[in-house]
Length: 308
Image 1 (cartoon, rainbow, N blue to C red):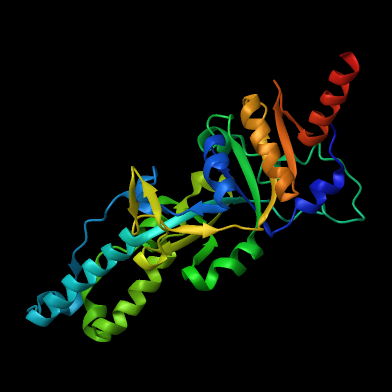
Image 2 (cartoon, rainbow, N blue to C red; image 1 turned 90 degrees about the vertical axis):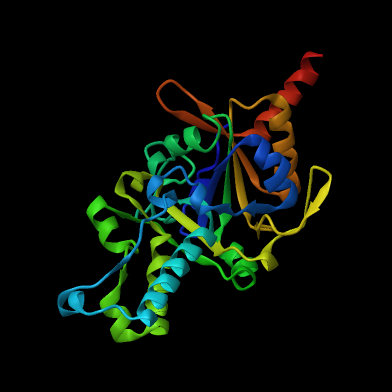
């Protein structure tokens, strides 16, 4: 069933962000609990994000030949541990954005969805393959403003668009060795503030080969107080998982035509309860066709009754 162009115009805005996932995860967790799970940054497949750095303390200029005091050595060790602690604590949730900059959403711009597919965050084939179970998963559209309103203060969110860099830029911008000269001139506490700012910025760097993902990232540092209570293997666990509240934040649900009927039925039920659009991505040999799944099911029901 064709979708009114108004739907695409309404969803083409900066506020809408998209999260790709498996159908089972969407059904059993995200839509059931109205929550998204923060995942450890260290568990990313990307080695730029997950590998631990080998750090030391480097001195330059005249300070190279100066003897290192016990206080400086202790401060250096403290700062190296502090950097590693920040990196180990970082947890994240990743979203795709629309490519904003076109006149598509303007009421004065008469157009069709066809020919504008690539400007949307739900049409990324690489994401459907990698994160949505090889084209057999789900993509959920959220309102960024609503998510931040619900969670920003509670979770002390770190949030930003991903900055895509070359290898040289990554090596220059990511936090490397502790700078002994700055430690001596600024003092431990002042330099620590500078380090914290740099490390937190580095959570939003990726190599430019990932630029097509057009990612927006929400993060937070691990804190037991932020964790939810879980029932795991018959036991209550209080300090494992941090969740992001997305209640009332869902704008639309995109499902794959490869899903089985039971999964589609469950997702349609969620969409009906949430009163949001549910769009089926019908994969074709040269592209795809987005179909209004709710209307399609209703039409099939009518045809089935007429036949019987």
